Amino acid sequence: MALAHERVFGQRSGARGEPAPYKAYIETYGCQMNFADSELVARILHSIGYGFTSQPEEADLVLLNTCAIREHAEEKIWQRLKYFHSLKRRRPHLVVGVLGCMAERLRQKLLAEAPVVDLIAGPDSYRHLPQLLRQVEGGHKAIHVLLSREETYADIAPLRVSPHKVNAYISIMRGCNNMCSFCIVPFTRGRERSRPWTTIVEEAKSLAEEGYKEIVLLGQNVDSYRDGAVDFAQLLARVAEAVPEVWIRFATSHPKDMRDEVLETIARYPNLTPYIHLPVQSGSDTVLARMNRGYTAQWYLQRIEAIRRYLPKAVISTDIIVGFCGETEEEFRETLALMEAVEFDAVYQFMYSERPGTLAARRYKDDVPPAEKKARLEQVIQLAQTLSLKRHRAQVGSVQEVLLERPARKNPADLAGRTFSGYPVVVRDAAEKYKLGTKIPVHVTSATPATLIGYVANDN
Ligand code: SAH
Ligand code: SF4
Ligand code: F3S
Image (cartoon, rainbow, N blue to C red):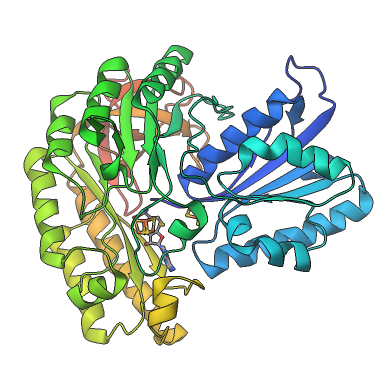
C-alpha cells in the first residue's frame, strides 16, 4: 500500500458556512486506511458541532492520526508534539489528541513523556471521542485504546474533504490476521473483520451520486474479505454493478491469498481497474520464511503470471523491505532477480525497522548494519527506476483513457491523473480546457520513471 505522506484536513468552517464554535485540525500519517479513518473522525467531530481548519495555529483541538509502521514514522510524531507543546503555551485552552496506530502502541508512554497530550484514542476507539473530549473538558486526561472484534464503523459516513471530489476511499475491512514477523499492524489494529457488503455498496452508490469518479476499496488484506457468502471477488462484482460509471481500485492484495476468481472478475467488468498492488517484500525463500509471509518466490511469480494471463494490461506494483534480520548479500540479490523477472511498474521500498513486540523482534536479530541497508535500498531504487522507465516507455505512442485527478505539481497549465490501468500521467495544457474529474483519451508522448506524459488526443 502506498504510504501517503502527511495530509492535512481543513478548509472547512461551520456546518452551514458560519464560523464554528470549536475548530479542529487533523493531521494524518501512514497508509490510506489511516487517511480514511481521519474522515470518520471528522464526521464524528462534525456531529458534535466542530468545524475544521487547515491551520493548527487557529485550532481549538489538534488531532494527530499516527502511524507506527517504522521507527521513523513515530519519530516524526514526537517532533510534531514538541511543536504543539509550544503552540499550547500560547493557546492554553488548546486540546491535543493522538489517534491511530502509534496511540495504540505507545499509550502510557505518550501520556508519561508528552505532557502536551490530553487525549489518546486507538483505531477502534473513535466512537468514544465525544465522551473522551468531555473528559478532557472536565480537566482529565482521556485514553481509550481497547481493540474490538466487531467495530467497522459501517454506520458512519466519512466526512470527505478532498477539494476535487474525484477519488474516494471506502474501508471494507479492518485489522489483520496475518502475522508477518516484521509487522506491527496486527498489534495496532487488532483482529481482522469485514464490513457488511450492503453498507459498502450503499456508500459506493452515494459517492457516485455525489459525482466521485473513482473509488478505492481498502483493507490490509482484501483477499480475505468475507461477509457471509460474499467474498472479495463477489464484493467487487457487486460494487462494479452498483456504480458502473465509477472506476474501482483496491488495495492491498496478499500473494498467498489472491485468487483467480478475483482476477477473472476484474477482467469481466469494464469499471474494475487492472491495477494490482502485490507486496512481495523479498525475493528470497529463506527471508520470506523468516518474514512468515506464507509463500515462496516461485509462488509469487506464478501469481504474477496469473495476473498477466487474465489481465494483459495490468499495472503491477509492490513493496520491498531490504535488510531484514539475517538478510545476506545472496538473499538480497534474489530480491533484485525477482524484480527483474516481474518488471514491476512501481516499487515502494523500505529499510527494515524493528518494531518492539513483533515476532521478528523477539525471534531474530536486526543485524544488517544501517549503512548496508541503505546501500541495498539504493540498489532497489536504481533497479526500480530502470524497470518503471522501461514499462512506461512501452506506453509511448498509445492513446489511453485518463481520469484527470488534480493540478500537476510542476506546471499549472498541466493536470495530473491516471490511466484506467493505473499509470500516473501528466496531461499537458489541459488545465484551461478540462475540469478535474473528466475522463479523456490521452496520447502518451513521453515517459519518465515516475510518470507518463501526454496530450489530450485530437485536441484542437
Ligand atoms: N497490509 C499490507 C501492508 C501494510 S504496511 C501488506 O500486507 O502488504 C505497508 C508496507 O510497509 C509493507 O508492505 C512493508 O513493505 C512495509 N513494512 C511493514 N513493516 C515494516 C517494518 N517493520 N520495517 C520496514 N518496512 C515495513
Ligand atoms: Fe502487516 Fe502482513 Fe498484515 Fe500486511 S498482511 S498488515 S504486512 S501483518
Ligand atoms: Fe497504516 Fe501505519 Fe497503522 S501503515 S495500519 S497507519 S501502522
